[in-house]
Image: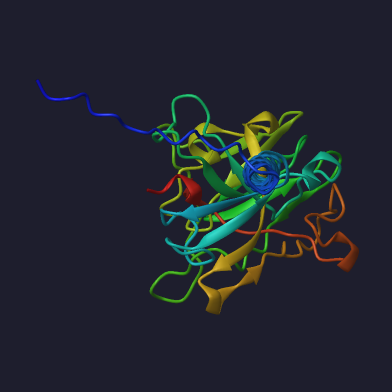
Length: 250
């Protein structure tokens, strides 16, 4: 028989103070990384849900004010203390029956609560409570091949041409009047459907724009200034197009 083979096993060394210190530093660094990631996610969610949100325009109901492929920023915070006004851009969830795969709409506010909006001979007229009927001057409406603004015509099946805007409602239309699916189809929208006010085009970079609501001679503003830059006396307005949140793109 062969003699047994003896082996010597080196006893494991006790961790040194330096080893323990390095492990603690590594664990501390990992915790800091996790905390930073969590804080970043929380800040992003708060900003996205309550302050501002980016959207990409995908359809053409706002041409020529906003083009497909433009990116706009939606202000969600100022509408809580500064009501929407005529000419503002508003992003909203479409009314029941007009959904397009969960994609929100963006249109221009035309009629405010209590007003009557009327279409006549291709023009838009607004009557404020206790006031006279005023024809809107709308320089943002898309123009035809003759250079004249496209007429604003009824769009529903029965040719409705007059609407009374109820309390807590807004009448909205796209600037590309021949193509826009708007309140001419589904009537005034509830304020609860509105996500926020579009105030900035931030891409393409050569067309960065802070949207401003135009003046409407003959009509009194109802809610004062709008948007982030109210202190500059620059109310925001804008455009109309169906859009999709840019963050949802693959």
